Image (tube, rainbow, N blue to C red; front, side):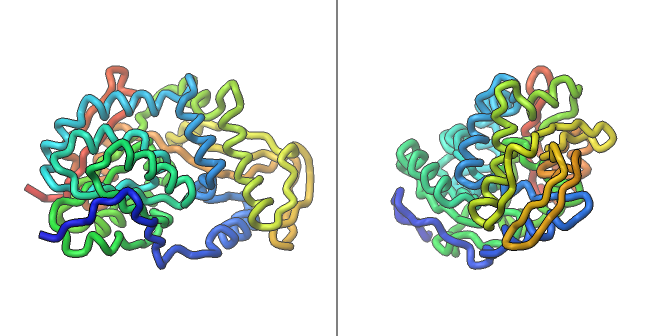
Length: 330
C-alpha cells in the first residue's frame, strides 16, 4: 500500500491551473459592470485572512463558535461514517482552526490537504497544524478552490476515502446555482470513494444576521475595505479608502446577506491605468452569504449528485453541519 512520507515541511503544491492574472481580470471586468461587483475570493489575501480570523472572534459573529461546538459534538459520528485511512481535503482552509477536531476523531487519517489561495497564510497555518498533529502528513495546495485543480501528486494511487471539509458557512458565499456547481466540482476532485462535510448557516431574523456582518468595532468594515487596499497595492489602483463605507444588507427575498462598499461621493479612480467612475451612493457588491433551511439545502446537494447522510443542528437551530455521501450510495 503506498504511503506518504511523514514531514511537516512539504512545500505547497501550486496548482498549474492557477491563473496568475485572474485577480486583474476579475477586478477590471467587475468594476466595468453595472452594478459593480467583485468576487469574494479576492477578499482573502494575507491581511484579509487575518481580519477574517479576527471577525470569527467577535461577539456578533455567532457562526464560528456555534459550528465549533457542533463539530466537537458530532466528530465521533463523522469518523465512524467515514472509516479509517481518510485523506482530508479542506477547501478554503484559512487558519485550519477547526480541523484538529476532525483529525483527532478520525481513525488513522492518511493525509491532510488544505487548499487555499492565500499562500503565505496557508504556509503559516500548516506549520501550526503540523506541530499540533505531528503524525499526519500535511500536503498544502495553493489554488483557487472554485476553479479546476489537481490534488498533490503524493496522493496518486493512495487508497482510502477522500473526505471533503468545507466548514465556516462558506457555501453561502455562492449563489445557489454556483453552490450546486461547486459541490459537483469537488465531487469530481474527491472521486468515487468520497464524503463531504459542509457547514451551513441557517435562515434567521435580520436582527441577528446584520450585526454578524457589520460589527460594532468595525472589523468587518476593515475586512471589506481591505479589498480596495489590495487593488491599490497589487493593481496600481488609486482608490481612496476613506471615500467608501462598508454596508451589510439583508435581502429577504433571496435569503442572503450582502456586503457592499458604497461611494460617499462622486469620484473617478484608476486600476492598471483604466478609469472607472463612481456616482455618489453607488456600490461595489463584494460578497453574498446565503442562508439555507434543511429542505433547501437537501435539494441543493441532490442537484449536485450528493445525498444528505446525517445532519446536526445547534439547540437554537442557527447553524447546521451536514455529512454528504454520493447520491444513491449504499
